Amino acid sequence: MIDSGATHHITPHASDFSSYSKIKGAVRLGDKSTVAQEGVGSVTIKTSEGYTITLSNVLHVPTINTRFISVSALEIKGSEIIFASGAAKILIGGKTIASGVRDQKLYWLDAVPIANLNLHTGSTPASLHIWHQRMGHISHSALKAHGPKALKGLDIDNTTSAPTICHGCELGKSTRQPFPRSTKKSSRILEIVHSDLAGPMQSKLIQGSEYTATFIDDYLRHTVVYYLQSKDQFVIVLNKFLSWAETQTSEKMRVLHSDCGGEYIAGYIKDILVQRGIEHHLTMPNSPQQNGKAE
Image (cartoon, rainbow, N blue to C red; front, top):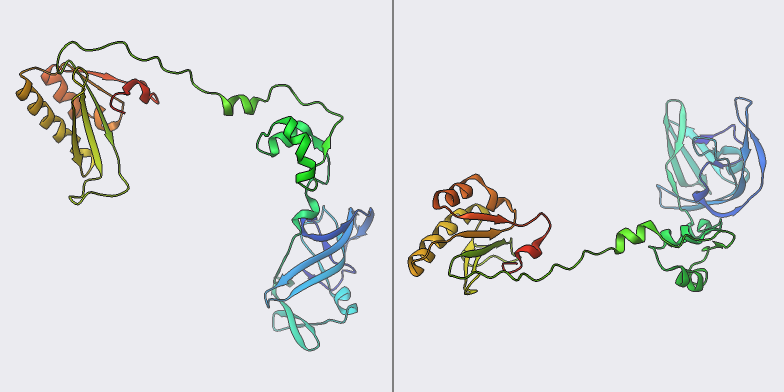
């Protein structure tokens, strides 16, 4: 906000400063109240006209709600400020370097601060465990050996000890127990058939297919692959496989083994299996290893 009553530029945001010194003080506001000043420094802003301006002696007052641009501070530095026709202009040597608009009897500068992020990085020492979490759970030894040299402001508070076990590391690095190899093997053709549907593929076939449905006989490891344009065609290829396999082998399929994908547990698939007396064995959720032959 452009304020003709302010003696200094003021900002509540420490991140606005390009240079900063901690200087305690008090600032008296227009309503006669007093607020604490935490520091003073320079703030660089970029105006809507494309100019970069550095404001000096800017007060840091965290408890106020907005930034203040002091008309008198600008005028002392040789600027000319014009308020007319619902707008404000800041000129130097007759050239407009910044402008603003009037909103509810207040004038607001159209500009944004250019923060110096390096100024505020790690200004307060933190415990080793806090830095461990901030730096992606890097090991404590590597952090102590290389952290302060690799990153300016990475100050470790050595007065506190880090816990021996990090809960986040435990969760992030935990693994599942390996699945044992299955010793079960069918004794005849079509006793167990493993099936899986994969897709969509990155590239479609010339016929427009982007899914594959596989059927693998557990006894012979004979594999039949069908190409589908959409998942809902699975019911067609299931019927096609059953007709072909049972005709060619003169055997009846007893068990279909698959995951819990929607194409396998749909009602019309269940009806086909029930009508033919075929058992449907499903894997546990998120356990593709249980259908390893098809996967």
